Length: 343
Image (cartoon, rainbow, N blue to C red; front, top):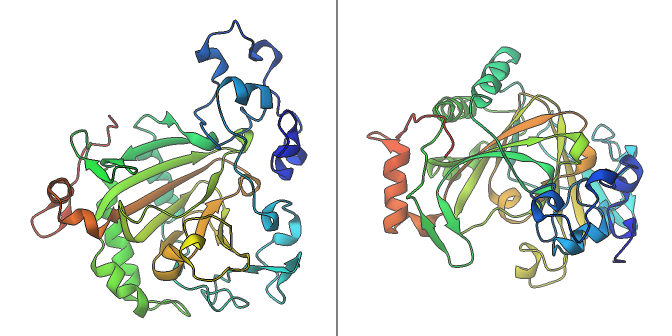
């Protein structure tokens, strides 16, 4: 990457957001206090449209933004998820489309472990859930997002968890999980209902993450694998306010997924539609064998997501893990209906 110019940053940022520089009155200088220089919550390699200026990143001791895999470096309309007749080849590598009707990626049979339930929430129910969410405050998060987090504090480097400040799960968690279980009792055409059973049996919600995206800030969710120490197999994600696309990727050198493979993996991508009001259920290969993320170019309007995760198996036998399970569930395994207040 080239420091000091926008050449180092994702192409779609330069094309879609031509005015990426901070306002002149806020341009960082050596005499401005740090709180003015820091206009967003990004650190390290994270980025949003408020921190793309190379000089600003140096003053804030930030690294260059994480490099976009070449396959994803130049988003374009032909990435659309509706053209299922053929795969789109870029530089000899295939970008696949997930078909909601068949619940698979027709041109990528190895992609498994994802169920998308459309109309999981009605428009009225989605508005009610959003109103409930908005009763609690959001805090600034990395990559141009705002967040609410209801979960234990995890030190990923030291592999430790503390439940001392755990605020409890929000009221709506129970209703969403119960509805998910009910919907999975009815076979979903072409989906992997049978394969989801073991993950579903072990699923007890212990962590809720609400994220809010806006196109004005180039909000994004970098490609990642949810930590396998802290979180278990099944991940639920409810989409609210606007449609988006979830991108799955494998073949990124040095990624958590690819460094455990014995042989080099050719880059591959699956693009999955996320209609508003839908529920995405990740398990199996989609959970462990592919990274996933939300590209900034796929946020066209404000979007709110509710991600519900369960505790990792290795934590369940620890004292903090046992305590968290007690706090998350009443006798009979019913998730605790706690206050929505974020602390």
